[in-house]
Length: 396
Image (tube, rainbow, N blue to C red; front, side, top):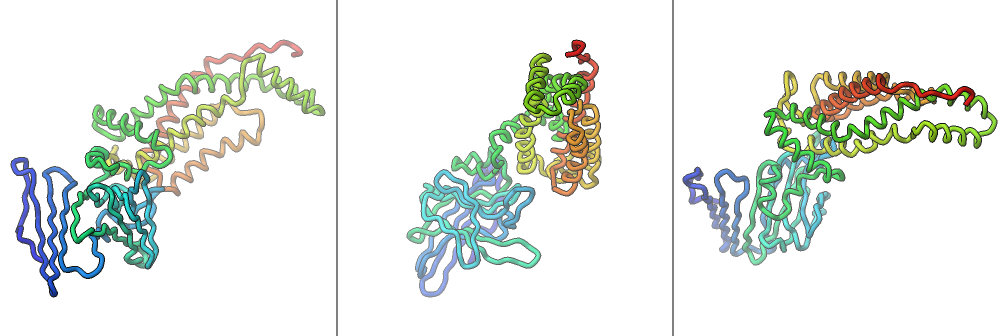
């Protein structure tokens, strides 16, 4: 194969250009492939024409393009994917068994955690196949995606670059859905939008995460404050609770009745202690996916030894500080009446610290949790000083 175009250099003064490849083979076989590029863009056009071919032919992408490692990093699936109809599909071919989509393929691609190489058939009506090429020892699988040529000719668009939402959306074929935030995408996307705005102000993604933590804390402050006051009030009721347990130790029904009456009298609710955590769990997982997948965080430094907020911290300093702050927060939090439950809660910081060290949690998320704990400690300190013991009637 030869190229009549020796070199291509684009600039603002020359924003577009193309490279053309020609092939002439035996028995009348001929092929022409033209790649068109635009200055400052990772997208381009692809035109292919083949003459004299025997049997079906197609355009193949792979195996190295797009980082087709076919593995999983922290829940991010790397390898082939296709957008068929209105669905994003993770293709998983086996040896000798390609995954075939007959029609309505909007795009097919090979992708890694932060990068994507995609073929986009114009019109979105062509089929596509994904083939497993080989599986090397000590390395993940290698794939190729193929778009067949109808009538020996095809025109496609292609994208080969980072998973940046605006660039992907510019092709208007739902290519931005390749940035898969999982089941919490409805939280991850707005969180990333806020993070981008905070980064524009602060100029540091780590600082933006801290500002986001403060913002989330402010939003949940009324609910968290109500929960902390509720737990503090319940702690003050423990002496009376012990009296009731002793008095009605042989009558479980009466005990429950008196306990509920005590709760109503002092306007406390045992379920309020869990409510803020339950509500913030989706925020935590949404931010986890956002920090893990979004390319803006790739190789984004914070301070000192943290050079990439999207991967695990090398020395686990912030993780240990997170565990210590979580332990202090548990010490300050009013304990439930059940001693066994109280001991389990005190053991949770050890569990989370070990889990964060063992599992590749992005250090940006650890910083979020650490700052959230520090703010919660300050809030708990204020509540502990402001809530006074309720006056219990004598003999009640």
